[in-house]
Image (cartoon, rainbow, N blue to C red; front, side, top):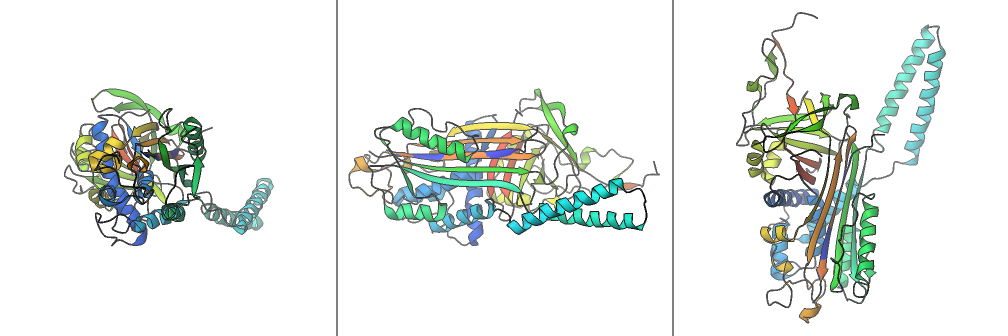
Length: 502
């Protein structure tokens, strides 16, 4: 049986042991948009960093997961360490504004059970509709009573469909946890702040000193549970040592159906042209005019391309003049059931155009481009794909400017995490030893399932008219960038690129 697709991501930060000050900007945005501003800017920075480090590979990560775990860690940073962390995160002056905004977004997206009365009404309507349909099936009189029963059944079905759309729209889970060495003393204010905004449930005491492998297994088991077993063995053997003092984890899971699913019988094996011009076979899904879809086309410089509304029947619908040039790109948005989230695909006109698109990828441009998306008929081809990625993010974060957090406190310019542990003994102070991120995405005819995990380890027939409506073709048979976002604020939850479907 075809399952609904899914996405999952986890970030883990490890700190070893041997109130942020001046930061990047003010919190001028509305509370529920603070996270969007920070996450999206960080997402584009990190995407370009990872893309530079991983050449032509498939990419996938969760900037939302990364931001959540690093924001928790930054809460305990001080001085230059704090300045660098919040600057890289594009965080506001008041870090609590980011904590609050991330929490609001998480609460809004997290699954909320439908009221019992709503589920009871749905169950009763189903019984009523089944009974009416059974009567109609056995009714051969075709008189006024039949017509009335048909209308009643149609009305019941309409109400049932409307109510059903309000429940089980998608599953979204955002979980956080702190794992601390049981003999180590942590600042209560830090633990209280994390518990308040991230619902971490306090500190989980573990025995890093005497049982690092047992502690590693506990954390990995938690991650596996939170991501429905999609992320396993996040922390590799020997990454947790007796010097580990704190591990911060965030796990994000999303599973949703397309608002208008693709049909399995329209999926076919077709050529997919890779970055080097070589072709591989891919299962290309097809949907002519999915409900709720949006479309826009752009020139090489990111300016809008004027896609025609009508086209001549004497010309070919795929006339190149109806699309931007080879260095331009197309954009399509496909909503998930419920309308709260959607996937946006940025598709260069040619495989070589991916580099130009990525060079222009910024939070500002992304906001501008998505603002030009327009609801219209579009003929969509999208490959089925599964991606599983794993990154050690320390070098990428250092390259973005988060340097001091990784320096051993024995050094005069070492990390400053006094908000977590204020000991004057450098051997008992903390620094980040690893930032581990794993993500998985599965996109198919029914929808998307995604998960991500992040951990911060701290150690230590009629005559045709002259003109007809133009229906653009969006054919993702070449490398593309994709984003899964929350629509109310535009927050990027997951981001990646497909250079070779797998």
